[in-house]
Amino acid sequence: MLRKLFAVSLLLGGSLLAGCKKDAVRAELSNICSPENEKKYVVTSGFLNDGGSVFCSNIGGGRMDCPFDVIAGPGGKRVFGADIEQGSGASEIEKLPSSYKKEDIKIHDSNGGVINLSDKVTLTGQMSIAPDGSVCFMEVDKIEK
Image (cartoon, rainbow, N blue to C red; front, side, top):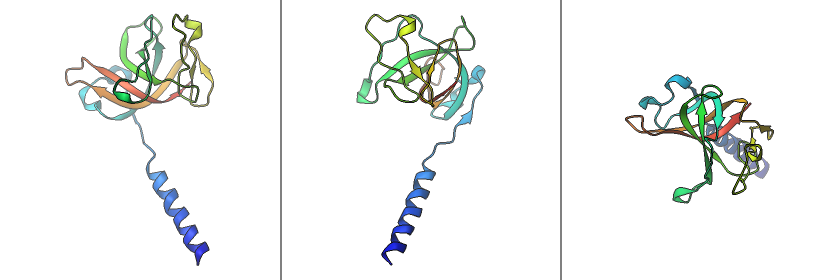
């Protein structure tokens, strides 16, 4: 009886965890900042750009995030912001020294490999967009090369 109860609790626990997986909606880079994407969990592709400097912070006591610009192609203009969590794990950026060089930037993809800023990446996360589009950024959960 105890064995059956344990098996049932494992099945229920697994079902609940499986239900927590977020499904991302594909969003084109050209309309990622449209107001209808506010609070949506999306996936899109582009290039990361440090814009000359990165200042990581944890405003509000949340996770330590480092902001990057997402651009359509090398040398392009900012399309939206990508907040990448600081850390040494998958889909995170390693802590930068105070006066860093581009080669010091170590962003890990979802498999733990290091990407280059010249690599086109696929980003998955939740969007935050002001109604007038003046603010548009993603809290990145997953980075794929």
